[in-house]
Length: 132
Image (cartoon, rainbow, N blue to C red; front, side, top):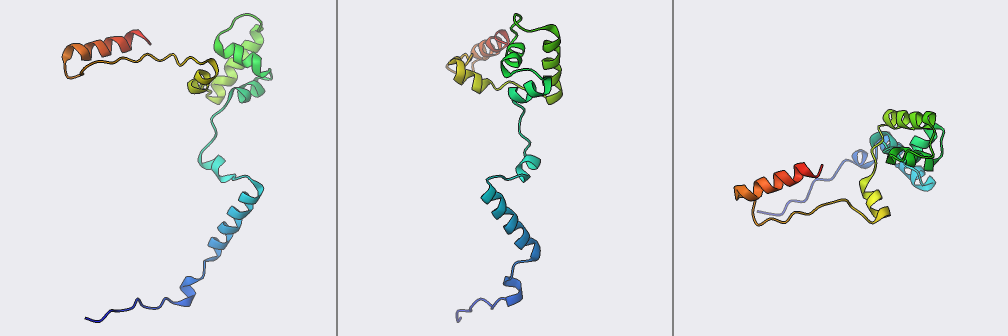
């Protein structure tokens, strides 16, 4: 059986569509500017403590004190503003960043021989419930 060459493509099919040209231009401009605004729509950025502080009209250190539970040095009104801003922005503290900063991960490692043994499975369940 002789080798068959692939059929020639229609030259009109090889040209990019108008929307393809637009997206290529869009990506090039975003790359040139160093921004990619579509990511903010697709993957919204998680709020940081700076965002909470800006919304509450307080400094970053005041927001950090309130969110870490420090009582002294923060007025009641500022405390309420920061807590409400954290709720509104759905702020969740980054435990990994805290672990890097404080050099404490607050993690307990439990090494057991096997979870197939009911005793060790119960130990793992009990230790997990005690440390929360």
